[in-house]
Image 1 (cartoon, rainbow, N blue to C red):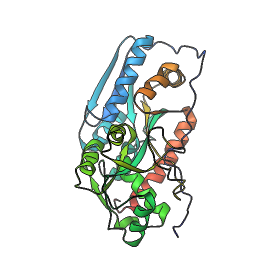
Image 2: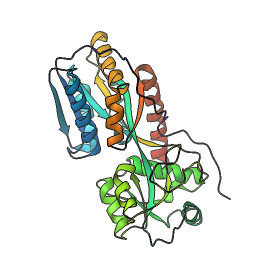
Image 3: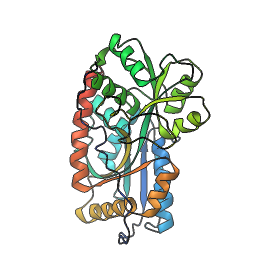
Image 4: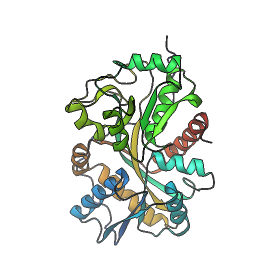
Length: 319
């Protein structure tokens, strides 16, 4: 029998309903979203949605996006901490938390003002229609027999797919240091590797796998949400014996150069966005879930998340 163990939730997720009658925040002169990593990734998509909403509501006179590739995000963090401008908002996600933990010299939470977590995307464990893994139980049994046996595909090393695989293995009682994880430059490429049979199984974001599941090119085995997902015929990890809820989340950090007045104004902007019906609609279009957590609550959660991530990376043999 698999070991049922309760682990810290990867996202601390509570989906909040959109508010009504929220007061407009102070209008900003200029906002610039700083996106660590390539311009075509999920972080950039998140920034574009935020930009469009702010421009539509006229909550800032000028809104820009700056992609800063290189160093897996460490260079962007270092620049942001050292020379972040008052209107800069850095997009943060689990991968950035992991990068900061692996770099060890990158002042992440303590070097910024954590403002808010705004949205997240659930993950789906998928396989090909002809795979020997017919159910999650089949996969779990194989993993317990030989943790190095099943090759699992996902995004970059230390990214949300990799972290979720580690947490899932821990929840089953498997040795995380023996896991065979195949990283790809992004989740979409990992999904294609499962579709064309190069890898037997993989973790992917709901947005990346939904069309493949509908077309019958992928078969879902489990979802990382607290409840089953519409259009995905698969149980949750909790139903499958792993006490875990996990989301690939997105949040915003501000520069420590801010005074309290400007910090509070940007916090009000984040809260206004997260509580708006327009944000709820944008999340639905992108298969994201609203996950507003702001101010000190977000800071405390992020500090705890950074600690949990560091411990998990050590368990995976990455530290």
